[in-house]
Length: 91
Image (cartoon, rainbow, N blue to C red; front, side):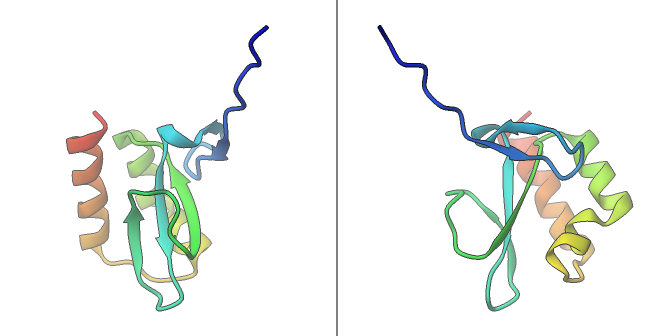
C-alpha cells in the first residue's frame, strides 16, 4: 500500500484560498527591509504567497495587500517585476 504524500499548502493573499505551495509565488521581506520574489521558497524573512495570475496581481495592487501584510511601502517597479515574473514563468 502506498502512502499518500502530504501536500504543503499556503494561503493566497489575493483570494484567501489554501493552495499547494509549489503553485504560488512567494514574496519575502527580510531583516534589511528588502522585498523580493523568493524563487527558492526558503529565504529567511516574512513571506506571503500570491497565485501566479494577472487577476490576483490586479487585486493585490488595488487593495495594497502586500504592503499591509509586510508593513512596507512598495514602488510601482516592484509590481512591474512581479507582473513580468508571472507572464514569463507562470502563464
